[in-house]
Image 1 (cartoon, rainbow over the protein chains, first blue to last red):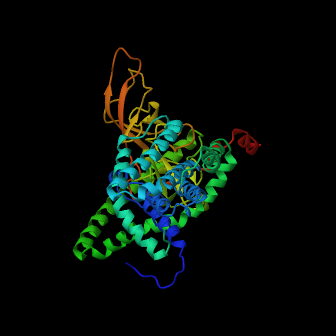
Image 2: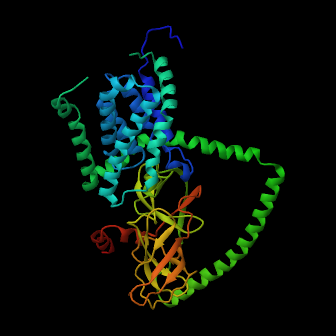
Image 3: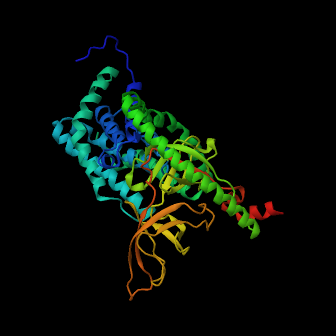
Length: 165
Length: 287
């Protein structure tokens, strides 16, 4: 475990992890892989909402969502909406989910990502009239599978940031 | 952390309403659209960092190629250059001849086209969106509706120019239509996108029309959005059904649809740009 000498909080670290996730979201990868990749920003937001439910406020989630919308030149409000709902749910589940073993957490994370995808499908359907491809849904399962990795990486960053429970 | 229903209403609902209002405003108010496009500058550091790995990889490739390979590549390119040069001479000759013939017909001369090279930044995070991002924006003079081509043919059009990067919608999007003509017979039609994949729809050719598999469809220039002569699609199959008024035609996009590293942005001539804008304005210009 990393020992931090000073008791100072480094509250910029969670924001830095969100930024890294945002970069990962738009990084060019082959088309084939892309549709199977989870939304990294969602995973990171869920982590912070579970770990620090009192500090992770809804305006932050909404703002991050809006930034995504602007970065990908989408319709502003779509990600803002989905990320707010995601963080709201994660905050409310935090006490229960934190007590679960990791694999059970993965299931819950996949469910949360699924709820977000349902929102996207609804928006897509309203805008274009088609529901998108079926393999979008594999990203939800992949998101659950990579959750342990995200969890350990972010827990390390949380210790670095000296933000405890 | 159990909250009452009132808690939900007070904490979550305002953000949901705010998002909904924002979406509606974006869709129905053009001014909000402009604001959103300028606000997209905050994406520049993100796109810059995201493009670093592929840029670095490209640089590494240069260092890692052996001298032999470079020499053979160079030789191949030199030969290709020679062939293209020879063709270009012929092209120049034809262009001159064309200009003379146009003069004879006292028609408008087709102006020389200006192009800008743009690199692909990142594919849109949502593959279902059928759009790509390029590293040129309104700061480089990119405008909404600007045609985008690559080495194969027409890729699509700029649909969302932001200050330093833009979104290009591919012609395979279902709501995209390209006025085209069969290169062999000059027959005019409209080519529609058909969603994910490389296939395009050509729904409105009647069953006696002169088309066959292998025909190339090029932009016809009608509608004023795309300049004429760029390959759009190649017809792969033609199915004539006597019971139906129109033929069933399958066509495959001629371009690489944003899979190339670079694309070309076309500048239309002044007159064509004006035609894209409000017709009332153009009339005033003519006066």
